[in-house]
Structure formats: structure tokens, C-alpha cells
Length: 400
Image 1 (cartoon, rainbow, N blue to C red):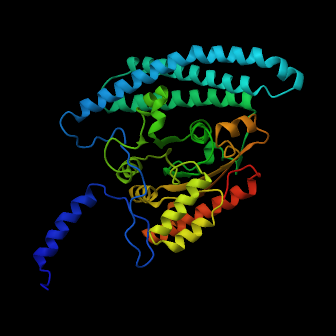
Image 2 (cartoon, rainbow, N blue to C red; image 1 turned 120 degrees about the vertical axis):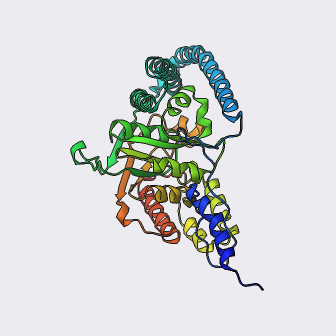
Image 3 (cartoon, rainbow, N blue to C red; image 1 turned 60 degrees about the vertical axis):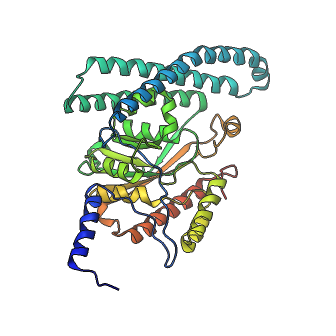
């Protein structure tokens, strides 16, 4: 066999270095010795505000798709409003005799009422976003910063209205441990990577509301593309740093790295490393996948998680590499997880106990280096999250 020459090594270096400079920071999960290469576990994403090379006409096609989508979803919103109002009147009138006689919780009225409030808030947000867009500058970095600040402020107000409606209609109460420090005592010199458990209806909305209005952070969020069906979210999140999954182009690792690299103090990159809401079926699939890849030790630890899914490494690794000075904030919650389906919502709303949120912060200096060490560390943090969730769980909490 021919020994590699200096020219061969230089050629390989020439081919590898541009990929590293281009932001290819995603990493596969560490493997046990002798196992086959792991396949990517993160979906793809396309961060706004960071243009990528596009084929000729791709930008025009994307704009047309966005316009068509928003036209359809806005028309659907306008059509649903009178329907929701009519249903609210009907279920209230027809259900009143039974609810009054049995002193029931008026579930149909509460749930339909919240739906109507949600639709009205969505419409109000669209109108406000349009006014802000027409009133502000149209081009340049100043225009982007102004639109982002306006979008964050408007999003905070809209989410606060929805939380207030949930408090009145569903008796939503949130208990946080430890309590958030006063603003004067909060570190403001470093950004945050916020890794959150994903379980239950509305957990991402509640988290964003807490980050914006109580923690004073500007969340840069990774969200599922299905949320584009909400026209207000589609418009507002399009004006702030975010990723919708699946993407128009690129990989999740590149997109998350781009978002993380742009973090400033008071910014927080929100990631749900589990990739979806916890269900027993998803848990079994995740463990089976690790076994198929030959990652038996990791699969055994994942099987020991009863209330959370094993975290996926690639997106978190990309963020840690792109934002090496960022502290990491882990967020667990319990109470929303029982609302895993419409049937569960009917059974457990209004809430009978507070929604509990627990967080802990790890400074950047204490985060291990290297993919293998970080993978062990991340799974260890998720085991801690699972133990806390188990302490808060009730028999109806989904688990394995």
C-alpha cells in the first residue's frame, strides 16, 4: 500500500477545513466501541436573519410559499372566530341545567371560552404586528433590531393575556423553585442555553411567557413547523431569531449553531432536546433505536428514565460549540404533563394542583469538554430531571 505523501495530507486538510469554517458543528452521539456510525438524530432547521446561499429564484419561491400559507391560515382564523363564538353560546345554554344541578366544572364552556380567547388574541396580534410593521423602518440593521424588539414586546403581552385567561378559566397556578432572583441580582454578562423538558399541552407557550415577562430574557426558540399554522406566531416569530422544524434547507446543527453564535447577554436559546412531547410509545422507540445502533450502555440508561425521553445530543452540542461562554439552564416541569390528549384535557381541566417548574443553572466553566464527556453529562442532567419529575408525579402522569 502506498504511504500517504505530504501532498495527500494537504489535500485532505484543504477539503476538511472549509467544512469546519462553514459551521459544520453538529456531532453524532458518542458510540460504544465497535458500534456502527450513528445517524443524525436532529431534524433540520432554517434560522431567520442568517441568509444561506440559495439557488436562483429560491428566495422568490420561499416568499410566495410564505404569503400563500399566511393567507390561508389567516382566512381560517377569520372563519373559526364566529364558529367558536356560536359553539360557546350553544354549550353554555345547553349545558347550564346540568352544570347548575350537579355543581359541575362547566368544562365545555371553559374549554370553548379559552379557544375563543385564543383566536381573538391571535387576531389582535396580527393586527398589532401589521401596525408595527407599517410604522417602523423597512430596511437596514436598525429596522431588523426595531422589528425584533417590537415583536418580543408584543409576544410578551399576548402570552400574558393567554396565561391570564388560563388562570381564570382553568385555575392555572405556577410554582417555581428556586424563585427567580431579583433583576438586580441576575447575571447579565453571559447568554444562556435553555434546555427544557417537553411534555404536555402548552408547555412551550408557558415557558416563553415566563422567560419574557418574569425572567427578562429574549428567547431564541427552536419550534416545530406545525406552529406556522398559527398566523400570529408565524408572523411574530419570523421577526425574531428562531428555527422552525423541519427546515427549508440546511441542517438542524447548522441552524442551532448560527442562533447560538448570535446570542448576546439577556438572550436565551431555547431547545427541547427530547425532540417531542413525552409518550410511552416515543420512549420505547427511542430506547429501541439506541439498541439498533449498538449503543447498549446508553440504551440501558435511557430505559431507566421513566418520565422523560433520552435527550438527543447533536443540537445541544452544536449550541455549546457555537456559544462556549454561555451558561446552561435546565428546566423541568410537572402538572402540564398529565394533559397529553384531548381526553386527558377533559379529565384534568380545570387544574387541581399547581404547575410546578424547577430549574438549575450550570456555568460554562463547569461544562465538560469533548463529545463523549458532554454526552454523559447531558444524560446525567436528564436523569436528574427524571428523578425530580417522579417526585412530583401523580398516578395519571404518563410514564413507563
